[in-house]
Length: 581
Image 1 (cartoon, rainbow, N blue to C red):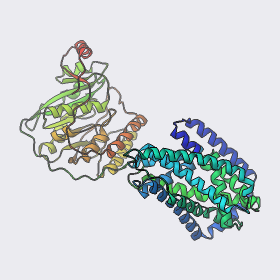
Image 2: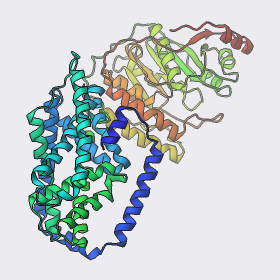
Image 3: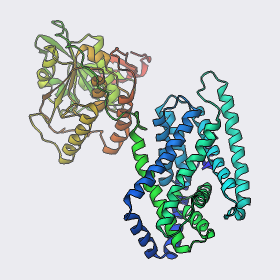
Image 4: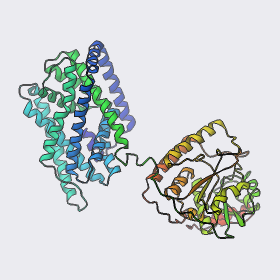
């Protein structure tokens, strides 16, 4: 474990495929050896003894927990700014990771957890963790020196001596590193003292209860001192652990030490397997809990923070335009039909049609211009999210009564614009989504129907409110919502736009809309690429610290073209200097 930690500190990269290959190969060899040399009846009788005393097993688990709680207090003593909960969670994540990853790679989770979930820096987390782990191992070696005479320690004195020297060197390096960091005014470290030494010693005494209980259940009456020796052997063997959970090395070390203490091979192996199983079960359960608690979890928040709604927006000024934009890429066959169905005005507000041409390689821009739309062409293909960002910036710059958008593929009906903008024009809502599942036609391919409903359900849980159609491509925003909207990625907009506006307190509404299949072209959405892009963006959105409703300028490169000549469009696009809106 020390070698793996040093590799992480000095950025020595171990290919994951190689680590897994070695670990799985070693696991297979160990499993074959154990299964071929072990009488299952012995383990069965041991487990029967364990099942007869469930309260004793719960007590052992409680003592095992106390060992790690004490280590968390020791860590907090060295880093006073680190809370007990986060220290304990980091330790539990490390031991859980070691039980599912080869080569003790779970050790890196100890540092990763506190860096991601607290204000501790990477250097401070690594220096304190490395120092305490070395001190932890030295405390165990010290226990062996005190408790070892008369047991089997003399036979292992040479190996323990070499290992102790190595641990002393690591401890010295960690202490030096901590001392250097303490010179920085921002450092939150305190040099280890007597509490660290005593706490580490006590933690090992508590942890040895597991092997002590497992040995007694297997019919091996070892003493508390002998249990410490067996625990030491298993821990020191983990320096060479290859398989996940140290499978094979743990059993060999525990079994060998128990045999040196006079146990028979069969019961010794049964005790080793039982102890390892108990530790593995505890580690996986505790590690799963540590993923999410204390807050923030390792992956940050998984739900949107509760935010009070803003006051109603009020009705927009009479005569203010409605900006209706269509993000489009290679929609030459569909875009004109969508524009033709767009109303000229809604409730006294003129409708301005804008097409955001996202680097189309066909005649989309020319066809849209000929149909009467104003063209805003992105300098290159950025993605649907970038097109929506640019369109919202256009609506905000025009101080539009409402900024509306739908896909340019003909799946949504622009003639239903009145439905979308009614809650905004009446001053009831800031953000309106057209829902394909709240009413109207529900024609949709079965797999897409299921996928949309499932993703909408997940979005509802994350957003803390019912959202019937989280992937709808027909939406409307008030002026203040369009000005404040932020999209954190270019691939898509659906979930992140909703979470962004709800997180800022904007009022949300849904209206039923109709929907039909596209008749030309093909959708860009593919499930796996979609999830790979959207899931990280959603996590980023719900964990961002800023929730201020400030208008942000668009950052996409664009130019305004209105020529009906397709060659002129391309020529202007090539000659247009790059500017930022």
